[in-house]
Amino acid sequence: MPVSDFTTLRKKFPLLEQRNYLATHTLGPLPQEAFLDIEAYIQSLYLGKRAFALLQERYEEMFHLIETLINAPTGSVAITASTTAAQAAIAAAIQPNAKRNRIIITDLDFPSGRYLWKSQVQRGFEIIEIKASERMQIETSDVMDRIDDRVAVVALSLVSYINSACLDIKPIIEAAHAAGAIVILDAYQAVGVLPIDVISLGADVVLGGMNKWLCGGIGLAFAYINSSLSEQLDPVYPGWFSHLQPTAFAATFVPAVGARRFQQGTPSFEPIYTSRAGLLFAIEVGVKQIHQRNIELTTYLMECADANGITINTPRSAHHRGGTVCLEVNRAEIVVQKLAALGIDVDSRSSQRIRVSPHCCNTEQECQQLIESVVELTQRDKILL
Image (cartoon, rainbow, N blue to C red; front, side, top):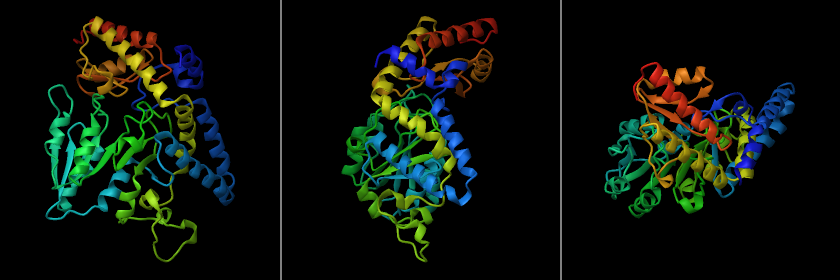
């Protein structure tokens, strides 16, 4: 898709017209159509119980859109409030035993998932934490070296939230499966900006959410669970939406077929409405096209940073990075605040790094403005790079 087409598509995102918004990795800008869906949701609130058919229709549409986006078979996706909730539902159904009781994680995984998996020591699991290299990247060989027949779960982030380092995941998945382990892949920082085909990827579970690169509402996540795994595991914390016939209100639990058995109670419908437009945008434009445009923008951003002596803490290779570039600056929180006052939105995850993630409808000029502003701020306010 030519850049000019993204220039036209930019008009769909009101926030991009108001700010130099480079924080899609945190909260993606909502498309204009999302605000129409929000109005539709508000109107449904006036209907009381008569709204149930409309809500159910939107709910089922969400499954279809997610499955389309990641090429997942019908019935292989569960909708949850967060990826942590999805991981918890799956973790609870996996039992340790004397021969297989290890879980592999890394120190670049998102804290919420790390908290959850580390807490499994209370249930008899042993946690193996792989440390990042000096380049702030998880080496594939370091993970593979720890995989053996004692490992039950390999739970990793495809793209690190800290610096956008992307795992070379295929060899890890193959090694884990050869050892009989389950692979649970947190793709929250990837879905919507990196093409994901769950069939070719081969992970047992792939997690994602709506409010980042998919430019949707907060409070809606999903889990793809391959059919063989979902049928093997019995839900430990089911709810009426995980029943085979939720509206039958049966006295005993009969699990739904496929991934939906890992859902629980009534979902939040507001993010279902607010997330529809972003999903449609990603599907219609194509994640491959979005990814290519992101590569162009992040590459240009890194070239500007290099030209101004700003250290980059994200892998250089497009194959080994997600959609974000991490720049090294001292007193990053202050830099973020001062940039916001100039109308430029980024964020930080340490005192020395800011995270910058161009939406596909951002421009090279906006990337250059960011770098120029960082340089000006650091020189003017004596915040040393």
